[in-house]
Image 1: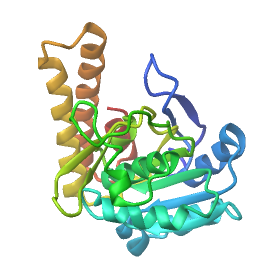
Image 2: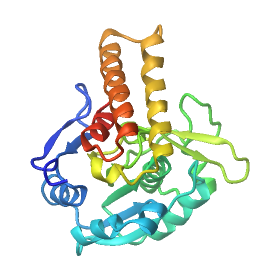
Image 3: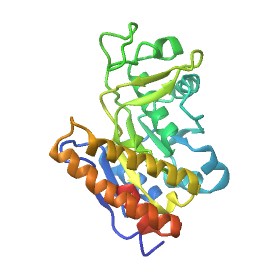
Image 4: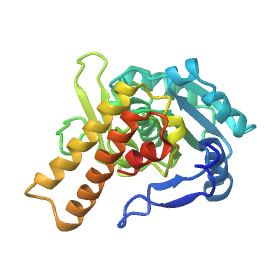
Length: 266
């Protein structure tokens, strides 16, 4: 572990966008603390963490310890497909805490949940009925507001799978009553993604590999799309190469941190 973690690299994930920044090379608690103090200067942090990580590892406690004095609240777990009722519960928790940063530790549902929480917070949407006025864009929503505010709460994502939710602004969630999938387009994605291959070794192999195959699928879709361009094709081809190599190696040797990080880069 110590041989892999040495010096941080931090750079934009995309050539044409300033965010998200991607950080790797430091253990995630250290990297998170560093960026909160230097880049973002935030002091009231709300953590949304995976239930399995909290139950089976010490990583959530390590993060809380590293952010000593900055953590104002913790939410453990969000159900699969991000039920909007659970977002309402989190909003009730953060509403009066003066939160200025959300840190996620987990996979896609956790990330989508955090993106929706800060979008709803920016638009003072505290109930399911009010949140129902936020979704839409490519999907028509007759109840959508004419004017929506961009999120202002900083979002730091520390992913444990290869879902890729941390690299896009849109967030998916599920209507509690109808079970319909809603797509929210808050115009602003996460501010920072911290890649930690050691943390990724805690992800069940089935989840790791299946999320990786979904990432492969995304690359293939771009390469086969008639609407793609040369730049997108180059990114997809490089990502596909890294994913295939990393997934094969991490299946053969789950503790190979270089292979895990190759997947994260892809």
